[in-house]
Structure formats: structure tokens, C-alpha cells
Image (cartoon, rainbow, N blue to C red; front, side, top):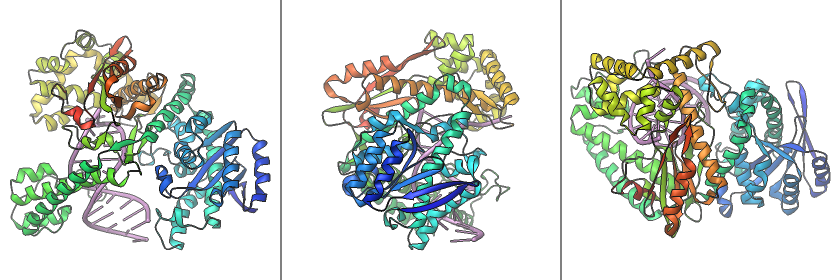
Length: 604
DNA sequence: CATAGTACGTA
DNA sequence: CGTACGTACTATGA
């Protein structure tokens, strides 16, 4: 048995590394004497869905704040068995982003997630309930290393951050390749691995105590853990892709990109993605560029903007070619190649669903299916994603969720009445200001976002006077909204926080009090969707849910029962807040997700 | 290799 | 007083 040691702010952590089968007895003994342990795995990569193509667990680590164990799973059955036994025997597990480890354990050690998830505490969820801000927002952050730095030991965090990079350098490889290559008993690697359960355990002890009392009382800790488990099941199921379709689009976009790059080159632009080159090229042509980007630290006056808006305004063949080539390249890589490259041996792709991510608590989806950013106008991208054989795609989305949520909590009589009577809210706003519906709609959303006349002017392309008039009309039409926003802003100013209706505490940046209303709405609306996901799971919809997209859920339903199941999903999802129903609507397409967007009656 | 900055897709 | 994300890319400094 190899022993290493480390100190967290002076208090020692003993790391025991099992080297041979004979060492396992002592590990088993330690496990039998403990009810709860920090847990982590080191794997060959992040692609847990590829256990049939080389993905494996290399180390599994257990421990508490002062003593940890590193088990070299890679050495064979005896070690795997010991880890399995430990996982089953412990009453509680504590892990940071435990979803990943549970996927890995399920794929490689064959313990179903369903067995371990109910007894796993995830420190990333607790950290978010304490403070959802990332480091860039001057918060503690949510990554393990960031939390260690903020709550436990700054020096240790720097070492943790640097260690895998340093090891990679020593092996003359890159950070993403080192995980599979590093020697199993490399001491630096073992130290890095051995400390993980200790960090998680200590963070758990610390964070649990400081989750706001109100959040605890409302049951948010358990709620978030159950939700994370359901979204983990969606990740596991994955999404079947139409490989032929995606490959066809890739080829088409490649050709498109090449064609327009040639045109750009004929005007002397080597790289259409280089703003510098474009500015030079246009200035050489005598084009006057005026639009500048936002001032920033290194560019106090901003830089010359080269976005599609500027380029299309130039009405020049080179600008046109740049727009088209940039777009073709980005779309191919972001939507189609990502899906193709991320697919498993059964042509399924597995998104990374972070069930509690944004500072308002909204979920995020990243990885092979960045679904929350799929172009929504038509099925161009979404045709890549297929319901199961014999199934069809159904989507159920909440109608006007955020505005209804605002109406319900602000109690503004006009806005409430509009929703209760099924009147057209955007038209009401438009009529009050004497503008077209589109501008009325913009004003409504702008309010949800906390915007003012300047933003409306920019977005709606109207003059200042009109923009001011529209917002004034909004305020006069819905006085309750203004009063509600003001009271939230004042509370934020006084306390630094806005509390959502579900008992979540969201920090508001000093001086940005106007954001409080948006945080209340966005955070509260997210919880309406979260509630729907949990209720659907309880009703047996786990295998049919594919992805959550803020106010919409995507399903794969057996074709024959699709209508009935969609109706049931709608019934489960729609939910009254403060007495006002947030209705949900279902759309049923054919096999591809894209087909839903091409239904004749589709709202999309 | 990491960070800042630009741009663009969504709710 | 325009919210919240993820991804691709360039430029720059180490």
C-alpha cells in the first residue's frame, strides 16, 4: 500500500493507494466503518457512453475529510468488485458533479444509476443553492477547483488546477489526452485523484450548513437532486441521430463554405473569420466603417464591428461571401459535425444536461447536442434527431410562460385579465402605444428582461420618442408590473438578493437592481419546467423524455399512442401559479424532431 | 495553453 | 440601466 499525504489549510489528509489485492482488506474494513464517503472516479475521458469503445474507469476514490482511498479499478476484477461493494455498502455518497461518476459506474461497473442516485449528494447542487454566481460574475464559481479556492484552501486550488496540466507536460501530451495515458501509479496523478473525495466531503459539510434556511425548508436540496437524476436519465438515453442526413448536410455546407471562401479570396481576404483582415480589405476598397463594438478593458473605444448586420449593410459581393462562408462553416461544425463526432456505437448522442447551471437556476445543455441553441425557424438542424424506431417526435411547450408568470405574481389586473380571457397581450400593449403588434411584443419582452427605451429603439428600429412613448404606455397599461419590479429591485438593493417564489436565493449585482424582476421570473419559470420534468418522471415518462429546452420538452412517443401520451404530458405539465394556469401545448410530428417544425399548423 | 474579445444561435 | 446560456473563432501573451 502506497501512502501519500496532503494538507488542507494545515489539517492533514492521508491518502492510501491500494496497490495489490491484499491491500483491499484494509479498504473494505474502512468502508464497513463508515456510512458516508466522498466519491470520485478518474476515467480515460469524458465519453462515458463509449464503454464498448475504450472508455473505462482507471481509479475510484473514496474518503472523508482526513482519510481517502484510491482503488486502481483498471487492475482487474478484484478491484472492481471492491469498488462495487463499497458503493453498495455506503449509506451515502458525496460527489462533485456526481452525475458523471454515476454514468461511468453504470457503464463500466454495471451498477444502475437508479441504485446510487438516491443516496448521492452532489456538492455542485449545494454550491449553486448557496451562491449561483460563476467566478466571472465575482462569485465563488461552481467547479470543484473554484469552490476549493473560495471555501477551503486557495493555495491547494492553484495546485489542483495546475497539476493535470503539469503532468500532461511531463508526458509531452495535451490536457485532454493525459487521462488515458498517465501511468496508473504516477504519484502526482494519485495525489490529484486522492484529494478529490476529501474536497467533496469537506465542501459538503461546509455547504450543507450554509444553504439558505428558506431553500432547505422548501425542500430545494432534495428537489434539485431528484431533478438532476431525471436529467441524467435523459443523458443516458441519448438521442438517436440520422447519420445519413447529418453527413449530407455536412457535405453540402462544406461545398458552400468552399465556394464563398473562394469569392472572398478573390477580393484578397484569406480568412473570412478574421475581423482584422476584413477591416483592412474594406478600408482598401474605400468603404467607411463606423459601427463599433462595446468598449472593453483593452479596447476603451471598442473595435470596428464586422457582424452580419454591418456586412449586409455594405451591399458588397465580398461582404456577402464573408457572411455565407462564415455561416456555412459554423453551422457545419456546431450542429452536424458535433453530433456525428459525439455519437456512440448505436448512433446515439448524449447531451450534457446541467440541471442547475445559470445564475437564475436555468438548465443548460452542452456537448454533442447544444440543443438550446438549435436554429428554430425550420427543421434544417433538428431533422438530425430521430425518435425511436416506431416512434414519433412530440414537443410540449408552455405558452407565454414568463409573461404569465409575471402576470400571476405582479397581480397586474390588465395583464391578468388578458391571460384569463385569452386576449392578445402583445396587441394590447401595441394598441396602448399606437404601434404595430411586433413592437408591442418587443416592449413586453423587454420588460421581462429589464430593458428600457434605448434597447427598444435599437431593436425595433424606432426613434427615441416612439421608444419612450411605447414604454410609457406599457407602464400606464400595466402599473402592477412596474410596482412589482420596483419592490423586487428595492429588496435587492436592501439585501443584495431576490428570492424566487420557490425559495431560491439569487444574488443581484450592486447597481444592477433592475435585473431583480428578470431573475424572479426566469428563476421561477425554470422551476415550473423543473416541476413538470419531475412530475413526468413520477408518471413513468422517463424513457420518453429527450431534452428540456427552457419552456419546452422534447419526447419520443410510440406512434400509435403518441396522441394520448402527448395529451397526458400536457395535463401533467400545465400548472397554475398564483391561480393563473400556465398552459402547455403539444405538437406531434413524424420521426424527426425537425418534422415538428414543418407541421402546417405549427406555431414555429 | 489560457484569456480576452467578437460573433451568433436559442429561450 | 437588455436577461440567461454554449460554441467557434482570432488575437495575444506566456
